[in-house]
Amino acid sequence: RRASLFRPRATRFLNVMRWGSRVMVAGMCSGCSIATPHLNIARWPVETKAVYYHEPLPYRVVTLALQDQRPSHERTGQKPAGWFLLLWNRRVGDYYTGDHMFGGQVAEQLTSQVTRYLQASNVFAQVVPLPSERPGASGWEANRIRDLAREQAADFVLTGELKHFFGSQHQQTSILLLPLYFITTMSWQDSKSLPWGQSTVRFTLHDGASGDLLWHHEIQASETLPRETDPMSQAALESFMNLNEQLVLELRTLPLASWGPTQPAPVDPRSSLQ
Image (cartoon, rainbow, N blue to C red):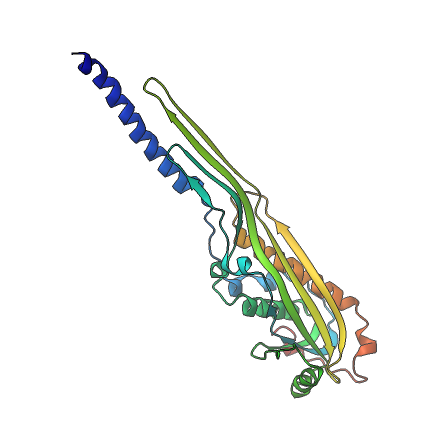
């Protein structure tokens, strides 16, 4: 008879444990891992967001592929480790986007975006991409730059090194379940920072006639989105758009007239926005 008095309490305690474990599993699955949608860099609306100049500079410029020099965690992505114990689960740290979220070949796609932005902004009379060309082991040599420019009848050649491109977000989540036979306590905490992105590229501009280096500058841009539910991948792409805008503004301020040829390349209106 005494055992039968304790049986309802034991049954209730086991039911609480089962209910608590289900709640914890559901909570960890839904709240402890930030889901980031994949975005295609090639489909990002560059043309509608680019700064536009009504009078382009009368030069023909070749763009070469960006050299990918990003750290490994920006390529593969990163998710903070979680601690999953019986009654206490916790995940704290920073998330980073990976190349798979952008369809892979990120350096090649960003090279294309730089070219598209220069074309859409009408900063130069002509912008010609050469994405298949790759530098040698020691980087771009003046002789090769000169040969490529001569083949394309280019006045200048633009190259770059991709240092950073990522979206990131900080998260702090914890779940504590304290089941007793007479009362059950559960604590839940889930906080996220605003998603932000950063892009850094070291650009170089070469003289097409000699292949010599005329200008180099490292441009860094960032973007913080207004809502914590916004995707990190979007923050990364927005930051690269800001970087392209800064690049165009700096190119317009360079003394290209004193660097360029005596007779600039003729302006072809049909090719200014290719």
